Amino acid sequence: MYLPRALFGPLETQIRLDWPIRQKICVGIARGLAYPHGESRLKIVHRDIKATNVLLDKELNPKISDFGLAKLDEEENTHMSTQAAGTYGYMAPEYAMRGHLTDKADVYSFGGVVALEIVHGRSSTSAQSVYLLIDWLRPLF
Image (cartoon, rainbow, N blue to C red):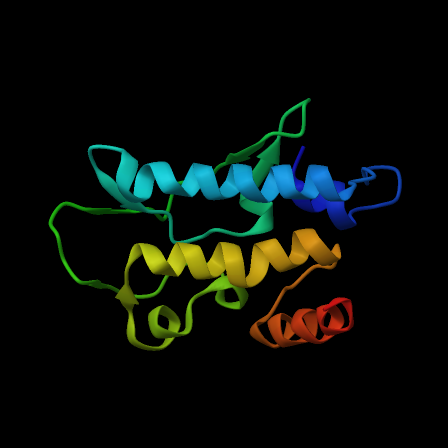
């Protein structure tokens, strides 16, 4: 099942996700990113981390999917200069504006957008929605 269907899809597809399950999903995605970012022999930047690229198995363990835009960083570069690709509402600002790509772009997409969607249960489909998510979460803290 796609993560967005479980979080904010039609009522018949939504799953009641309590805080421990939401935490499990967030930690699982973070672990899934840690491997291609540095634990594997090759360093890979996904470039399109978003809720629709996260699948949940029967035990609600997340699996990162769709590596079609991924870039291989074969050297120890400070960043790769490339044309931005991915979904703009999820892109790190330095990558979207200047094409400076590092693994931090994936971390931004996950922590700055996807994790907020998981915590709040609302979809973010544009760059402006990120700020709306932050405003929605502010009363919780």
